[in-house]
Image (tube, rainbow over all chains, first blue to last red; front, side, top):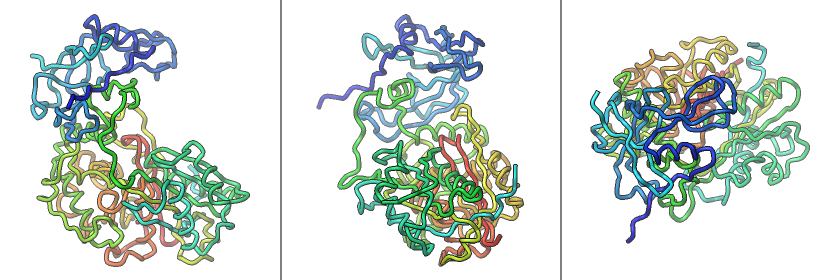
Length: 137
Length: 390
């Protein structure tokens, strides 16, 4: 039986700048042009100052594991061969949190506070997906 | 905050359909109508006595944006003076009861039905793994789905894992809550897990859904409907059952990032509700706490102040919340072992206890009961303080 692909995110107009960045190997977050706050993902206005103007800016791609779970149930056939797999929340050095996966490590080796850095996985011609790998401090 | 509403209104009727794998109706609307009729009968009232209808539609209501309107049409209810569809997740049930009480106290309605119904289970087989495009999953248009993050279990798991990291909360602590509630369910003939004992070893042996949640950490998704009738205290005294007085009511919605919501909206909601009821925590005889997960109970116990922040684990360790414990919690088995009707599950059990109709699981003191509702990954919260006397 042919394996089913994982879901590929839609490159919507509000997220286009994010995927342009990932194709260049850069992790991007949203910066409010009113107050300078950093956000992720894109919202239609800033929750601090209500400004509707924001731009995509690159961040270091470094952060640490803020929390995680280990998914044992198959919610989508694209993940059927991977269970159990971990989903993590990475707190970026610059502040925003990012839901992702960690590569190069087994799910049960993940610890909160573990330092990680971004890496990219090609999903399609349009979508390079940011993931994270452990890094030395 | 005005305390004018203390004991001005009461719950006079309770109606619940058969829960769980119940396929008596094809849709939530049918379960809702059945639950309201049962609640009216329980109160000794008729459909024509209703002038208010508040609906929390759940996930499968056919036309959820106008649920109260569609239910009114379906039931042939005429000349209502209060109607609304409400949704703040599991905090809605208590919030509907507050809205009913406000309207009754203001003279804008006299007899209000508050109902939750849902029909997520489909015969003959439950849904298999979901398919479809990532866009269907929302949030950054499918980005979470690309990482395999699906559903509410996975979101609560993030928060539970933070709690375990920061406070040393153990898997056994979550297990102690599951085991205690199963003990209560074994005393409740209406519970889906009646007559099905569970030990800590059984808990650990149950399959993982999303770590740190085993199957028995998660609520029992159910078909059914549950309704209550709210009226003035004066009118309630003339009806079939002793009134269950609404002594205090409050809401609290902290906002912010759900992953950081280690303190729920309970402290804010409690402050308002307890002041209105003029009670302190030590006055509470039993608590029916929203339990979509074992972890929710643990956080809620901390946030009402039954123990300090971070000490929910040790608090539940030695049978504190089970039968014969010092604080009876979720005395019907709760949403983990009895049935999941969002915030209506804890409301219903509190009414049964307060009326003294709980049979083998009846708690000895039931003058003042605490009910909590929670939604939005611990981001919405509502509190009711119920009293057997005004």
